[in-house]
Image (tube, rainbow, N blue to C red; front, side, top):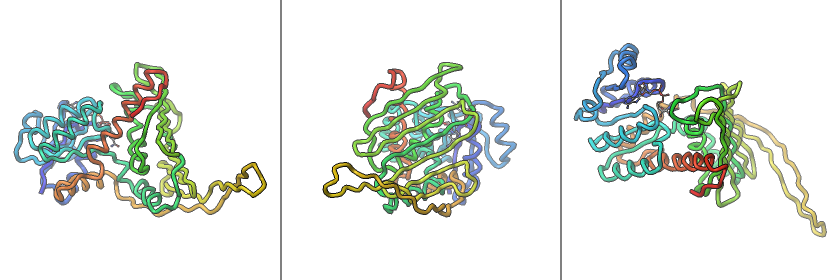
Amino acid sequence: MFKIGVVGCGYWGPNLVRNFLGHPSVEKVFCYDKDKRRLSFIKRQFPMVEATEDFNEMVKNPEIDAIAIATPVFTHFPIAKEAIEQGKDVLIEKPLTSKSSEAELLIELAEKKRKTVMVDHTFIYTGAVKKIKEIISNGEIGNIMYFDSVRVNLGLFQHDINVVWDLAPHDISIMDYIIDETPKAVSAIGINHYNQFEDVAYLTVYFNGKSLAHFHVNWLAPVKVRNILVGGTKKMILYDDTEPSEKVKVYDKGVEVITREGVYETLIQYRTGDMYAPKLDTTEALTGVVNEFLSSIEEDRPPLTDGLTGLNVVKILEASEQSIKNNSKIVYL
Ligand SMILES: NC(=O)c1ccc[n+]([C@@H]2O[C@H](COP(=O)([O-])OP(=O)(O)OC[C@H]3O[C@@H](n4cnc5c(N)ncnc54)[C@H](O)[C@@H]3O)[C@@H](O)[C@H]2O)c1
């Protein structure tokens, strides 16, 4: 049975608390937030949690096996480092850290201490993304030609990070999960209107092969759009996360190239076949995250979204930021 500490009880932390409390292998949940009002809130919501007013008390408590961190991004590294040094396994919210060097240090430290570092790339645990991965892995859509995502809405403006660090980790983690190739380079453009942080940005990720990925993130959109298009050489997938039930649609559409003997120009023929929407697992993604974290510790194996997965995403975010500062210059990874 596990005893878990949750650090950070703002917007996302209570979701972690609820899922840990609901897990059959969890005996007790301790909570810490530097803001006492949030601690009182969590205690009112979940009277069975033990609220701790001192981080040191939590991190040094020998009763606690693992710590989940849902604080602002720039605090992930110092909190996780201290937790691992004190012999705890850690589950860290996305993005893993605010610098790739910090992610590398955490991975190294965890290896030395034989502890688990897992990043909460929540979308990887959704029924939709699991189904897309399955469809791509069984070869149904052919080779991936492009990955195109749009994640836009009005706000919420963050006070410490730009729109790329806030919204793009979701889509970059999905891309990293479904495209087997390692990205080669990034170029990005972004603009700020209300403070020093970009509120609209476009990122392009390049690969060695014939795939290209593009991400549009925006806090200034009048409507909420959550679309991902994956174009394969055989079929194409549309993932619309705002759809209540048919979130994933697979289109039997594509292009065929015909070269006839004696004809020098290539002929392009369009193919439009059927569309189907596969049945999806509707289990809450965060239940899968918590389950994977605890199972990986019990089974002494790396979790699906381990430290290296988190590092891959942070590297792309960091390169995007560098590119934005340098007029969209291509940054090699
Ligand atoms: N996986 C997801 O889908 C998802 C969704 C939302 C947020 N997040 C991530 O969760 C993290 C928190 O985001 P949020 O939206 O809950 O932010 P938030 O501002 O609502 O909450 C953060 C909480 O952390 C507390 N805090 C700040 N510094 C602290 C410290 N040093 N020690 C202890 N507590 C501290 C604050 O008092 C606050 O209560 C971020 O990394 C964010 O990217 C993930």
